[in-house]
Length: 161
Image (cartoon, rainbow, N blue to C red; front, side, top):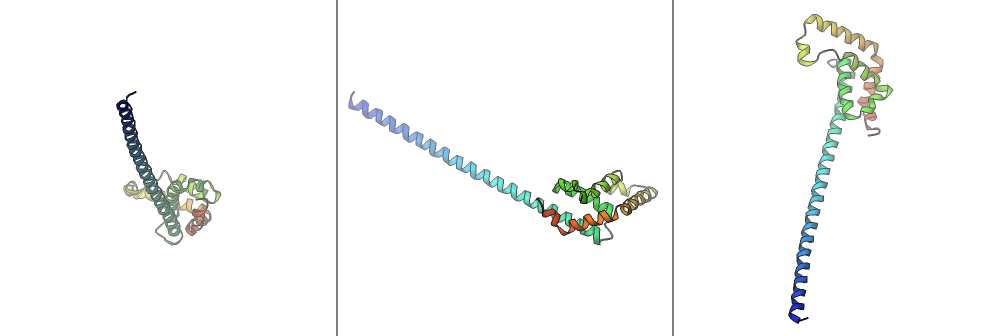
């Protein structure tokens, strides 16, 4: 073999090594960038989840406190609001005996219109629904109050979460 051929083959080999090294280095950089971007997306998603979790927890406590101390918040309305909030916060809480009354009241008032539909109802029908809600609230008053007290403290919301 001639020295020119040997040197040519060595040059081609070294060139191939340099080109492949550059490609590998670039791929590693892109891989690091993708991992960093993925980690940033995960951190953002976790922060969003934690913020939503705190918002729901705070909302649950506020509704429960209003049920106990604000005459403008009826027990029926509070149960309706708590049902939706707890379903989004931690649905398993609604399965506990202490909070089953929330689902009971929610289910037994689900046929009653709300918001604009309520406003559009004739007064006679509104009074009928209000009487129905008062009877339901009287029937479950103690259980609703107990659930609201537990939820207002926030302790039940911290457990298992």
